[in-house]
Amino acid sequence: MKTCITPLLLFLLTISITLGSVTIIAQPINDHIVDAINLGEGPIPYLDAAVDFASATNLDDQTPGPLCEVVDAGIWYTFKATAVGMVSAEIMNPNDPIVVFFSGPENATNALQLSFVDQPTNICNINSLSSIQTSIGINYYLYIHNAAVSDADINVGDAFAAPVNDLLENATNLNGMVDYFDNDVHFLMATNTNDGGQSGCDSGLAIWYKFTAQLDGQVIAGVGTPPGESAILFYSAADENVTSGSELTHVDQPTNPCAFGNLSSIQATAGVTYYILAATAQPYIDVSVNLSAILSVEDNVLEGFTFFPNPVTSEINLSAKAAIDEVVIYNLLGQTVFAENPNTSAKNIDLSFLQTGMYIMQITSEGATASYKILKK
Image (cartoon, rainbow, N blue to C red; front, top):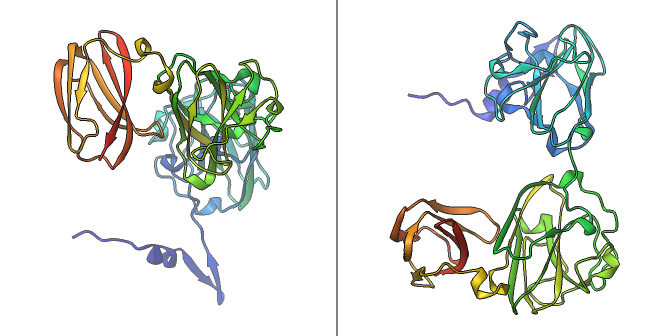
């Protein structure tokens, strides 16, 4: 029989009574490496106030030698660098402090998986301040030990690059694309230069996408957050060379409201240029856009490929002239809900598990890819 420690019991076990007073010992939430706080989620700089280091445990804390072996209980932070920059961490009330940076795999489960970042400013000894220069694409872990309650001041802002499309003039060009998925956009680092001033629906901080419709048709865009935390909006423009929000006009259609939401769509007009704004209070967002309806026929079909029924209630039947290499189905937020590599020219797929709604089915065969809308009833 398993024994379960309830949150209330765990809370009671962390209370010590001394001289008639009650002291609550709060174990830091990030004293295990698997619970390392992701500094990429902000705020930047990150101030961890009144950390009770003495209550930390040392489960899986030991790092490998010989360059830097730490064995005392500490707390952990992590981040993945997307820019070259200097980052630093400091204990504000030092008492036998250790502040040291390591690199390692994403989602490390044991400190033995880590490697010491061997730089002169990263001191593996008693110290209250360390810093490193980051390299792009490296996962870093920060270990901090102290013998007294203290604030930890950490600044990793220079380790993150702003999204490439956070300026209107750098809007991601979606022309010719059937489905576009921009995953884990680090919105925390976006700027708001020239983002506002739109006619009909003014906005602030945003990242941008653009396209010119080839045909009349529906374009759908979504962000992977709850409706009240983000906005996804369509604007029209004179051309694809916009540099200021004042050059944009909100597309006034019921499915493109000037409001918070995680899904918007428009009926695009052939020859018109559109810009898509994505905005959120979240540190990371996923953005997806489906443009299949505005592409010319030859841009969005696989010769000899058919599927039925559509709408689908339970099973969908696929047939192709050559072997179907891959089937991927996305919801309108860009999340994968089904993926398979059939390696056959005919395939029946059970979709009874899907909720009612619209989905995008992406088919790859003989090196070519096309997307199709399917409706689940």
